[in-house]
Length: 181
Image (cartoon, one colour):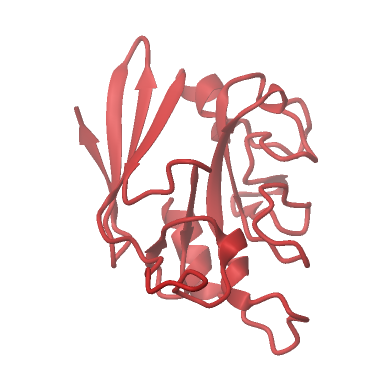
């Protein structure tokens, strides 16, 4: 979470020649998924959509963040359409089910509950809702609804053997901290 926020602050994806794709649609984000590609275990990917169709949840290899500790690995636990858990480029530590026994996740509070994503703006502030529907940087199309979080995002991770923890991401600052429940 902190690394995705860091990337958003140092690489805001603004470009003079965006070709109709708004820089605000290309924000750095995390997506959590459980699919056959992740061996049906919960995993996440850090990426920024940069193509003409944004917020697809199907980042290509140029959009996934590279592991700063190992340039041969992506910051993906196999959640994309490009890579499965067995691919050498996949970072198995990002497969929470495989690495930590996490078998379920719940997003609540200010998070986007439906598509299990969390993104950040260039100041590191967490953003709500899908980037695919953006027509401006902070307001939903045709409404006054601000997309900045209005309440903390709460991510609850559960392991059958270890119990549950909550990760709280505070609105405005994006400060992330663990709360044991």
